[in-house]
Length: 280
Image (cartoon, rainbow, N blue to C red; front, side):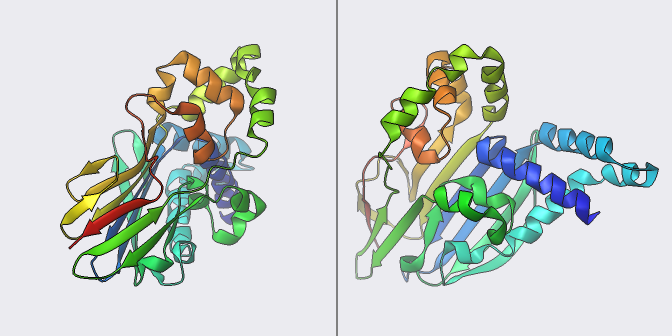
């Protein structure tokens, strides 16, 4: 069974890197600088069904075929086990708290909770690719896709939280775009495959202030909740010209996607950097 789990998790990693995922990260911060991270990662049930079909096709005998029916359960269990090992990716004071299965309409995954003692040590990678394997499994590809959001808190009667967004790596971007933008146009089949990967993909990152916000320059504020990123790829699919641009450029990080889809209604991307929040 371990062999099947490795195969399935490898496929899940590929799908996570390119799409087929909803990734929701909420950072809750208290005035003393401690807090929790709530991480919800969901995959399409269609994806899990496809993986089950693959496992059955690879089965070597009837017993393996029977075990293949348990692929969805085993793959999810493996992801939850891996989530227990990833606290260090959030920083040296982060600790694993809990993980449990999560389901919404048409989606299956997990919700993990981590605590941290000092938000000044916290980093949140806006790319979801690290969330389908153990840290040591992600290797060089993970290093290239790290786009950390960092935090700095100055405590006082009115505390100041400064949120620094990832820097856009502009070097060679023009060359990469020039070489890729026509790919989807030249290959309709590739474009259809890209649509399948992007469908229902969504990445959200938000900060919940456990207190009363006095002032902030955050663009997207709802009460004490500040949304830093909300990329709903279904909204990109609704605009053929934009989708053609995105699929042709083949972005590999969220920051690259942001550069391609700025100005699309319904997508939230914080452009103020840093974001400053004063709260009690």
